[in-house]
Length: 168
Image (cartoon, rainbow, N blue to C red; front, side, top):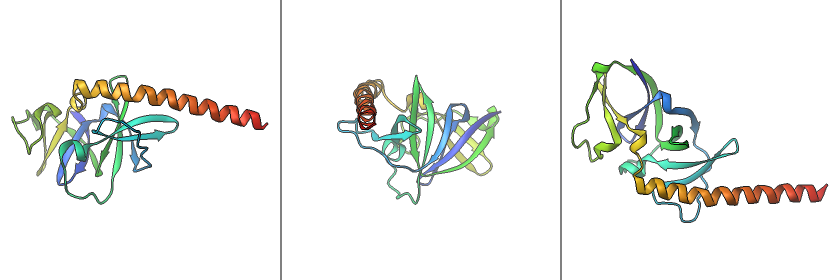
């Protein structure tokens, strides 16, 4: 049995392997950074850690308005990335026989984003391949865009510490 965190985007249920999930957060302030790649909404600050935020609604072309949103932070390569979703449904277990290979085209999603389709009772869950949500070019853009921000963030933190010290 494999466990998945199931979430909604529009009218569809998606799942991501629970082993990749770090935490689930309520929607929070998203910081827009100039010249971020278009597939990123911005960054979020989670207890002092700056995490890029990927809006899966934009990524998958979901146009149904969201009533609420949540952020799932997942392990991604050497760090974390936040996934903006509509809502968290549940944690489910799927047996290998409940997972079928993804068809060549599924509702316009590129199949490289999928690991398969999960069948649970009367619903189908689109199982995401987290490692393939970003193309090689986008991964390069993400690393290029996050490095200067991290440097700027360290510089800003240093300036705040220096100002605080000067005030004492």
